[in-house]
Length: 142
Image (tube, rainbow, N blue to C red):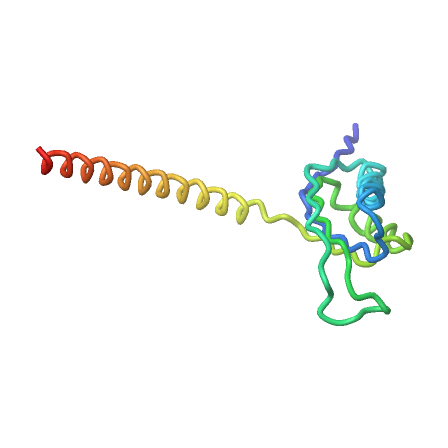
């Protein structure tokens, strides 16, 4: 008995849309990008619109574009097909798809949590010092 299974991996895709006139059209383009992912049995995890940015130099007579980052899971074998489908769509100026490194991401999350703990401890220490100073000032006045 043969069992087919897919290995879903996480990816980050950076999209540049150069012919965007309004915010309404960017939502349609993001939806079009997401639909291509789901059409290939992928799952969109998050979407972040990074905003309009100027290019360092003019490319194909375009000076700026709207950048969008989408994180998704898809079978690794489908990524090349997804990339080629995006190449056929005129609305997509540039698309770059990168694999998410799970170990690196876990390390970044751990560092962020440790930094939050240090910041909270530092804020608590500053508050204690402020209260001690206020208590010392009140004792001096008496």
